Length: 167
Image (cartoon, rainbow, N blue to C red; front, side, top):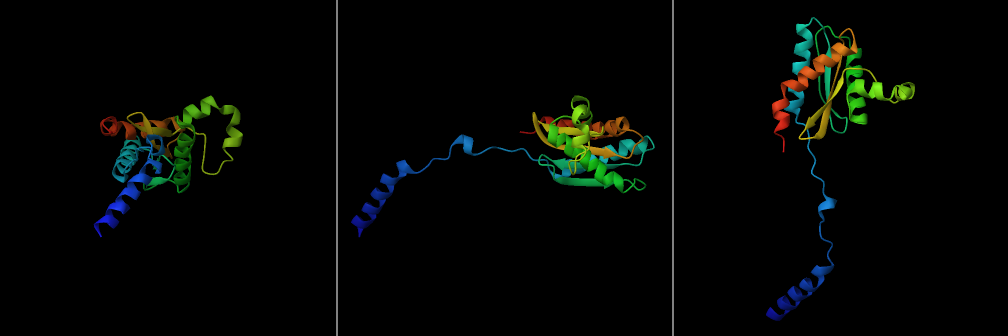
């Protein structure tokens, strides 16, 4: 009986060199935004706009463009939900703020505005942790994208310390 176990163990050991090892390039560590962080960003953006008298919607998407949090202030139009998400998606698509994307690629704006779920308008900002894009925030409803962007920036700035220490 012992010889059967010994033979089986030896056979297994003989096969191990041909087993494919897991290589470092086969697995990629991914940073992911948490719902709590997304909520805090959106809430700070809403609060900032509210202090300036603007009723807006803030949408935070993860690194894949999947909505994590949406907060619509009481009197923000229902259309601001879709617009805020589309601004955040423009950030995920381009890797830069939606305003910078607009400035850099105004030549393709008509085509990009036809891409479902993407709008090249100011008001979307990247959310980065330790240099990696982990998500984006889009704000819509203030009278002008520049004001939407100020509120979005306030949301990201409010959690900057938490983003800077992400491993």
